Image (tube, rainbow, N blue to C red; front, top):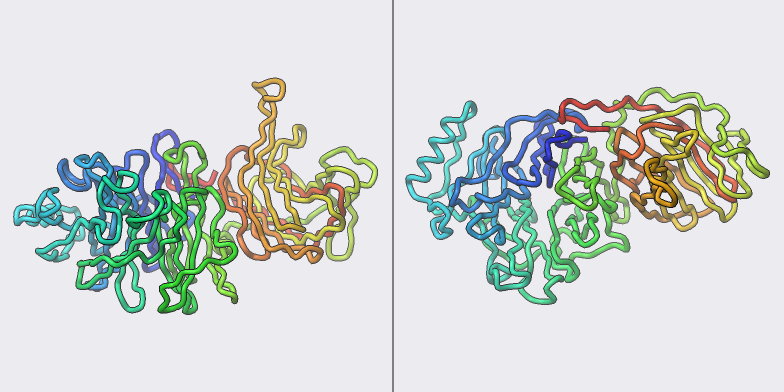
Amino acid sequence: MFSETDGSRKAIGDIHVFFHEGLYHLFHLVLPNHDFIAHAVSTDAIHWRRVRNAIFLGDPGSWDDLMLWTMHVSPDPHKAGAWRMFYTGLSRRDRGLVQRLGLAVSDDLYVWQKHPVHSEDGRGANDPDLVKKAREQSQREESNEITATFDAESCYPISPSPQHYESDLTEGRHWVSFRDPFFCEDSGRGILLVAARVKDGPIVRRGCVAHYTEVRPYHFEPEPALLHPGLYDDVEVPNLFTIQGERYLIGSIREDAKIRYWHAGPDSSDWRSYHDNVLMPQGNYAGRVCEDENGWMLWCFFAMNREDHTANNLMPPPKRLCRADDGVLFLKTFEGFDEWIEDAVKLEKPMLLLPESRGQEARKVDGGWTLESSFGFQGFLLNGPLADFRLDCHLSIDGKGKCGFVFRIDEESHDGYYLSLDLLKGIAQLRSWGTTPDSDGEHMMSFNALQGGNWLARGACGEDFSLLVFGSYIELSIAGRIILSLANLDFQKGHLGIYADSCSLSVTNLSLHPMREPEQRDGQLIGS
């Protein structure tokens, strides 16, 4: 997991990861100032090392002299061995109310040069002096001089087309949405997707994915919106990609802080939703796709502070993005975690969390255990305290009671994480449940609902569960699909177990693997 250094008063913002020749390149915003786009690299998608920052705010008077927002890096289709970064910029002159898109180019992914601007924009003029200055600046770079040649009739920065999208401060919300660029090839054309807004309809329902086509090298012309659901204020951080002939469009929705997706056929403009099009549960945001040698991955950032998204953010490990036979997308645990897993521990008879009472026992049976608590709650603890682990098992329930997992539980106070599982309805709920010693009365109780998720329950058949806890990262998979994904630091270490409440549980295929504790290297990796 990657984050800014503790105490720096900085936080990671929107991210983009690009894979090239065995190396993951992370480009990300730095909050709250948004004054540069940072760059880090990794060979395993777990450990990260900071390298040279990519681009900075423009000089005073330029179109991007106030803030830099979300970016996207892709190979330059017009120059082999080169890359382009489309990015969002805001200006002081507009008081940050108008968003535009700029372009930077690189020959090595490390040294970037901004494209000169269009003279009509009035932010610096694309005159010979500016072009000369840009090229002189690139020649002063310490290494890897950039050799891109810019078109004298530059179209940058790109502004929203008044024909198709809100483009003026007098429209809609009185600020112009035009951000989060994403470049890709679609049906043989180079297209640029943008989070924008159509011109008509209820003001808070105009969010769309704008669509620009590259008609000649580095020149884009507007098209009607690729997607307008008619529901959202904005469809942020769009992504478009194809798996097995089906096109998928991913967007982040601010209203409920979830990542959603739509699908369409190879040449179709009709975007459809499945019964559940939530790809990532609440708290995960600004999802970006990346393809490496093993397939598609999904990355995002996670906001640990729900009240302030400009502080205490981190980038969780990636998820492997998969397509089911029926076309539905789902996420699997990143296979890179296998490098952190230690040998399975021998499981002894579970220890009871609460004093034993009538109808509560753990019985060894062929292939596993039967955990019974006929009356009330009982936790069945496995082995000793653990910090980081992966627990795998198959659970099925007899009765209409409750069940779930407990982990990082304190043996005396019983403070820790409680993960409830409704095997009949297919509902998972993770809670942090503890004691606040410096308070009294009812304020001593600390109860925090962290995240919930759903799955298509099979009832009496039960489910295969995998619970992965790695530093601050918590992930629950059911039948191989990620249901919960979050970060929390309320509890660091404690007992792990399975609980039953007014039911009998059959626990089979049970295995427990401790994991090596993630390291921290002065902000380069944060896993705790």
